[in-house]
Structure formats: structure tokens, C-alpha cells
Length: 440
Ligand SMILES: [Zn+2]
Image (cartoon, rainbow, N blue to C red; front, side, top):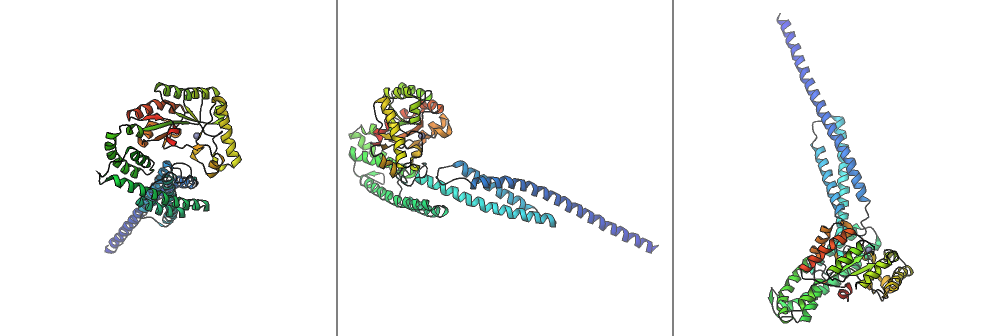
């Protein structure tokens, strides 16, 4: 009897162990199943990540054109990689096979993390370059031309340049960056002399000597040509203190300061260009139109109209080629043919040349010594945003004395934005001049 009971007890005990074992097994299977699901979903996320990395690494960053979208995509991809790594890392209590899958996926994700770090570094280097060299496409000879920076900023830029040089592949770019360094140094010297000059008039916000009108104008020109925003603001605030004193003797300096030139590229056409003409007429403003030879061919009557309304006409090449990529004969052809077409219609030969993309080099200036290169300092980005509010926003953001505003008369949105741009500039007491008045 007792033996029977003991047998029963052992059986029940074994059964209990079995039940517990089964529960453990089921639990393990459930966990494995859940882990597998997570791994599968991360694997499909990884496909998206890999594609994004693939696309980013194929981007051509050699032109150093600012591209916020690229950086944004890179940041988002990096976030996804890190999120995925965390998700996979959190998986625990799994058995052999799933463990192996986890390990493989983790290895792949770590590689992605390295790749996206390298891409981010490249994009940032490219962006840094674009702030140093302006938004124009990379061009060795126009490099750092209108750039000025303080000594401390120069040093940090030098460091930045050095590190960027190492992350850039091409020998030609290395050489160009070295040339950039040299120019940064030259610009810096010019800035040091401006600083010294400024200190003879004003120090610690106290005026030492009041400059004459001419001295003030000279300072003003130097300050407004500073490309570095921070520095320009620092010196502009000192200038405004001086201005209050100078204006007492010479009220006309106020007019001299606030000059702006409106310029319109890539036209004309017989729709938006005409609307722009009407708006300019309404406010009695003269502007500069940089025309393409092809458009002059298509709309000779509009060319005449623009000329008869008293606007200045400049040359924007025949068909918008990057002049730095052409040989001398082709450069000459692009510019001369357009000049001839315009002269034939208006009787006047253009004197200003606005090279497409702002890109020019020694070859261009050598082939056309009589043309003055006319760039801009406010890019409204109208070609990119196609949005009147954004166009006005750029003007508000970038406005400074002696501004040359770049717009495109072939876009309807640009024509639509013009009236508000004019109203804003007027509200800031700016007077409208021709681009050549500011360049010469
Ligand atoms: Zn253009």
C-alpha cells in the first residue's frame, strides 16, 4: 500500500516536472517566435536603410552646393540605424538559431552605422566648403574671391579646410583647396587692416574720431563686402554708431548706403517678363536683365520693350553653359553672339556678363577683357522654391547695403513675388539702382 502510494507520488512528481518543462519550452518558443518577428521587421527596415545609404553614397558632393535635404536624409538614416541597433540589442532569452540571426543582423547594422557616419562626414565637409566658398558651384579661380574672415575664424576655417582636404578624393581639388587657404590668408590680412582702420574711429563703442563722409563710405563698402555674417554684423553695428555722427554733417550718406539692384536672369519671355516690366513701371524702378541669346532669338520684341523702358541689359551667354568647362573659342562664341543679338535689337552692346552658375575663370576674363563680371549677393532661390513668400524671406534675411538681388524673370512665381519684394525694400528706405552702378 505504502509502496503503491510512493509510486503514485513519483509519477505525479515526474508529471509536474514534465508540465514545467513544457511550459518552459512553450515560453522559449514564444520568445523565439517574437524575437524572429522583431528580427524580420528590423531586416526589412535595414533594406530601406541600405538603399538610403546606397543613394547617399552615390551623391556627387564635389560642387560643394549646400544641400540641407541630403544632410536631413543622412541624419534620418543614422537615427534609423541606431534605433534598429537598439531594437536588436534588446532581444534576449533566445535560443541558438535565433541567436545566430541576431548576431548576423547586428554585424550588418554596425557596418551601416560606420557607412552612414562616413557619409555624414562627407556631407558636412561639403557644406562647410559651400559656406566658405559661397553657394556657387566649385570653381578654383573664383574661389574665396569675395570672402573675408577674422583671424580666429580663419584659424578654424584652416583647420576645417585641412580636415576636409583629407576627405576629398581628387588631386585637383586638393590643389584648389590649397589655393583657397592662400586666399583665406590674403583676405584675412585685408580684414586685419579694416579692423585697424575701424579702431582709429571707434573702440569699445566709444567714438574716438568721427570719420569724414568719404572715410565712412569706404568703411561701409569694406564692411558690406564681408561674407561672414557674424563679422559683418559686428562691424555693421560699429558703423551704425559712426553713421549717427557722420550724418549730422552729411545727410546724403544715408542715400548712399541703402542701394539695391534688382537683376533678372535667363529671360526674357513673353509672359512673366512682361509682368515684371509692368511691376517695375508701376514703382518707377530700373533693373538689369541678364539675357540668354536663345531667349533673345525667341522674343526680340520683349528685348526691345525692356530696352525702351530704360532697363539695362546684360549678357548671360547664349545657352546657359558653364563657361569654365569651355575652351576659349567656345567662350567667345557664347558671349559675342549674344552681345551681337542684343546690340542689333537695342543699339547698345552689353557691358556686364553674368556667367551661368556664377562660374568663371581666368580664361573667361582673358577672352572677354571688356566685359565686367556681375555676380550677386542675394540669391532669392526663386528657381528652387518657386514660392513668393520664400523669395521675400530670402531678401529680408540677406539684405545689406549695396545688395544685388538675383531673380529669374522666366518664372511666374518670381514675377508674382516682385511687388512685395519692392514694397519691403522701399519700407527699408532702399533706393533702386542698376547693377552696374554698384559694381563700378
Ligand atoms: Zn541663369
